[in-house]
Length: 466
Image (tube, rainbow, N blue to C red):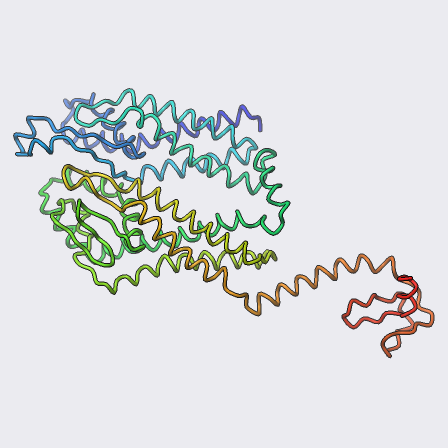
């Protein structure tokens, strides 16, 4: 496919991704706007609100300013008139990442992954800049530089990851192939990068899946508290719909919180609070219904949940080791140790990035500290995954694995030896054999003795060695 066509298709993909993300917000907001304010509503504020929420979904923090009239009417203290909201609803960000990865994979299959990735990111950056320059609200503002830079940065990360994954496997005829050749020149280290990425994917899928299951269990166990908080809010159907949709957008964020809880450090819901397996210390919590899922108390025995990330690491180590044995590439202790540390490092990096997006501020005062701390979360999850992966990767090989390796080596030696036998074959006349067995008169050649019990004429061996 022509490079220009690849660039145009990648640009079209980026435009579609941005348009779908904006439409997902604009369509329900338009319906809610109509139901709330009627046909005579101020439609000029609908687009700025949509664009601001779209930026917020890509990690751009919000600066909220409550008008003076509303402060007096609601009795809100003056020092709470301005606050930041920076805990990202990760549902929008994940949609952009997945859409971008799909576009990058298509560009890589077309043979121009770098051009396609840059083209798509450039178009997404133009759209992001257009949105940032046209969505200015008095009550809710976003930093202009971050509003322009963060959404295309998210798209660029997704498209690069998707493109490199495909180009690394299929080849790109360029820089990735040269890197691949450098790694292949060291046969004992060539499988290590792919094994690290594969193992990290298994570890993350296992850990995130366990965290999602934990959230589902809490919904089943504490659904009554969530319903009670909905009832306490005393909102109508329209308000109930808005609250439900907003909390669904935060579902991936809650999974990150749950994963931090499983890892041990837990998370905060306000300054001076902690929710972890070792104990729960909560003060006054906002009446947001989804906070009804928070456990009221914990026991020291609940620290056993840290075995879940360890199990995820062990699952990753088992998957990588099984794949290497199946491919016939048994690695030494040094390579397997590097794979284990690589899996843990990638997992810790993912945890740190997720924690940065999933923590921050949701209101004034003590609500400025909410979510997991990035460094403890990353170190804890990385260390636990390292322990599990090391157990499976660094353990001595069992008999079946060693037997399979010896069988593969024997087959390889036999295949190589069969190519060397033909030129050395000589007619049998009166062989003086090492063995007392008499060769069949129908045999035309005498096989070489490879210490496997084959019959070899002494004279032939002596002549050829002499």
